[in-house]
Image 1 (cartoon, rainbow, N blue to C red):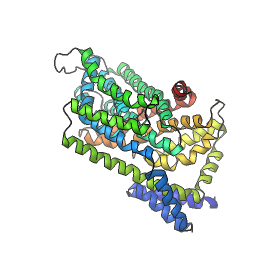
Image 2 (tube, rainbow, N blue to C red):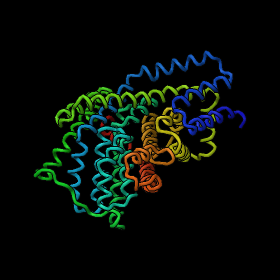
Image 3 (cartoon, helix red, strand yellow):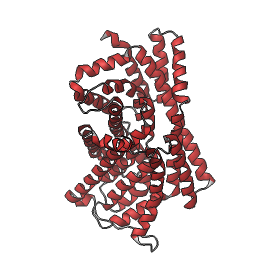
Image 4 (cartoon, rainbow, N blue to C red):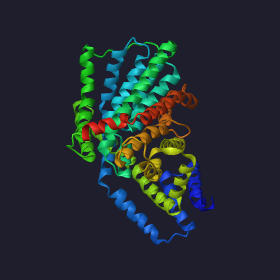
Length: 447
């Protein structure tokens, strides 16, 4: 145990810094530099850390997709397309028990496939739907849980920023990850809708039928077609260009960003104010991600130098039994980390340690190394989606609380999210038990 004293101390120092409230990026880098002195590592070794930060993060052309996807999501939010689609979906499901909650879940799926920005999706769904759901006497827990869970689908359903980063970290095709995540993301959305229908059947008072406002005299089918057209074209332009091999993820992100500008112009929402706000918010979000990536690189390099990777391997082997036992231990550890760390830190710090372990396992499925890593990456993505929902640091919970009326307390939101976390774990179990849910589409399209 003594040989692992330094990596264990590094983990405790990291957790302590985060709980104190220091910015995560500075905690990661600071702990790394501090333990470089404690472990008496030659100062010249920090030069390799700087080199890795520059070549692996700052000079990585693939990461150009991150600000473009962020900008795409923010401009789509300002275009008003989501509000119009929600109104049409409300009309479609009007008079049906749980119809408004189903509309929110469907809109969450569409928004996820159009933006991939969790914060924007949760806030937008909360602003548009939460007051209406409360006015229609929906159960507070069902309303809050549906909005939080549906908004977090953007972390999994492509174009997901997380999948872009994970593809870069694991050195696997982002296009394959996008295709692999599509079916599991839709399965999760389907589980949410099935749960809403079950609640509406078992406890009708929690999900009453409602009415929908009608703006204009346009027929429902035409209104729905009009409001679905823009998101569908955007999805086809971004994901279709990647799947067909016409564009790289970075180029596809540029297509999406240009498409949302045109969409905002057609809807009359392209103003200097909206454009300025979107650019500023894009810069803040991208800067945060890059700073965390830089800090995580420093932390992980020093962590490996003091024997952290060996400690992780020995720990997994000690608790695991066989390939699936090893996978279960890794998933449990990532799930627990999701209570305390954000997905960016987990991706940059933990994935490089666990990926070689899982990639070397033989699950008896006839998968090559890249296929095992693709499957593992999607399992991690589903798992990390829960990090947005699990207290005490589930970001989606705080996003919703920030725009929720006073009668919805933080305790209400914590309770509301429990069944949806269980649904996500069911989705994770399905993806583990049936790898074809993940690998069928990439095999079909790319072989």
